[in-house]
Amino acid sequence: MNIQRIFCIGRNYAAHIEELGNAPDSDCVVFMKPASCIVPVGSPVRLPRGAGSVHHEAELVVALSGGGADIAVGQALHHVAAFTLGLDLTLRDLQNQLKDAGKPWELAKAFDDSAPLGSWQRYQHQDLQALEFRCSVNGELRQLGRTADMLYSVARQIHILSRSWALQAGDILFTGTPKGVGPLVPGDLISIESDTVGRFEWHCS
Ligand code: ZN
Image 1 (tube, rainbow, N blue to C red):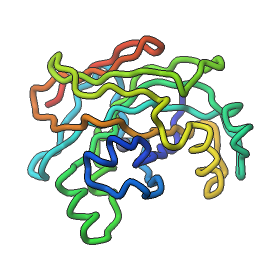
Image 2: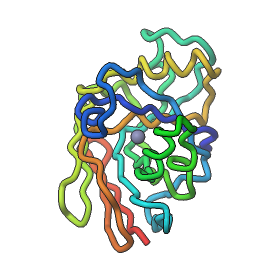
Image 3: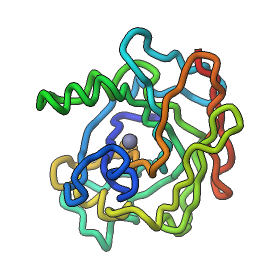
Image 4: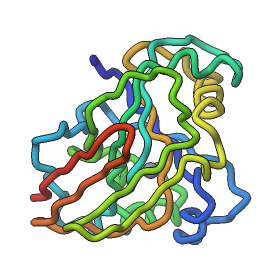
């Protein structure tokens, strides 16, 4: 797959909004990462140094086959080509500083190696709102996500994005993280898995 743009949705699981101390009634947040942030399975993740804590955010990721602008919610899933799991790595201390200062999040979200990404599973009308996924660090379970708990469904997220961008083949979407985010340090082994897409792991250096 030739990935062009990485869209990310933030604040999509109520229990995660709560753990970060954000307002429960806030809208979802949209941000982007460059495709150069992707770390395929089998490559090490180089954590940034000297910039505070790096948190894992395990997420369902979908790839689009196209779709264009102004996609209706009811049509949105017709434009999903594949799905997998990924990590939206986040410099949490820096993100909190940027949030407090009202500044954009790129420095905390779009750094090199900030998007480890699993292998794609072809979308064949599996129920994307009925997936369970797990994130473990050194064998210890950190996050257990159920896409049924999303505040904005995958279809709704595609609809929202399509109001600002004409969606194209090669666009992928990180769909938000459930609670349980936490720090990674060099030497950690992080894995994400679900019954539907398999298990993917990365060594942090
Ligand atoms: Zn995220």
